[in-house]
Image (tube, rainbow, N blue to C red; front, side, top):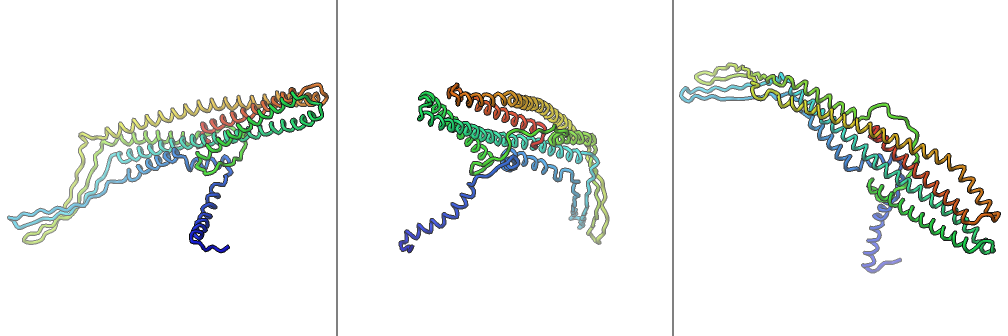
Length: 405
């Protein structure tokens, strides 16, 4: 092809320039296959609350920098000039402060307590965000399983409808039976469309939460695995305990905050008159703790220790209640799931066999066969509902134990 028109050349150039961008967009929009581990990683990387909590930890840790540094020495120079005598004196001295009190150690302990509290809050925020992401992930998995369930139910109906259509043409099936099956087919197709729309909505919500361009594909099992209880306290609880210990340590150090700071002075003194003479300067000074004798630091240390202990007790209480509730929910869902499987398995097989045999022999109508299929679908939906409930309870339990931190 030969291109002669300038406008045609411009169109070709624009098209060629757009091709790499379109290819890159197609690559970005390609659906990503996500597992539970992928969701955890993406949530922790993209959740604004997790980022804010992480920055709070960094800000608290920055408060530790230099808080326990020793006071800086001071270099001073003074000149005294007497015009009438024609003399001048210069004094150069180095002053070294010596802190005797525990104020520096108390401030450092309070800063470490703040960092530990911020770290505990960040761990709990990360666990909560991870739980939210996984709840959406398993809700999308459940919605996908519902689609497969409805698709299987429709396939069974379509298979039976094909057989009935042949019998209707042969004159061995009534028009009522044909209309009844057609109605059931429409209801099943409606249920499938609704399930597909729900699954798409769940995947879209998950993609929005994780910051993905395209709706992801999911890989995982809906039913939770059998796991034992956590024998150790979560890391957030250890950070709460550390905050309390550091605050109490600050209180102990603040008991000696009334001790003054001693400052030593030493240097040389030069007198310039009729002749130049050299001497020395030496001295000592100290603060008099008349007004500020560490009372504010001791009060802050005590209040911070009480607050840290209260936060630790609150978190422990909430964790115990959450574990008890989630454990009960998980046990109930799993027991009901087992009871449903044991109670319906044999019954469904017997009903299906009886309905198929009776229909073939002409003793049962197609309505009874459809009733068995509806029962089979209801049992499958109930099983899916209980599996999802067990998974939600399992996530709540993992969150309470600190396993998602």
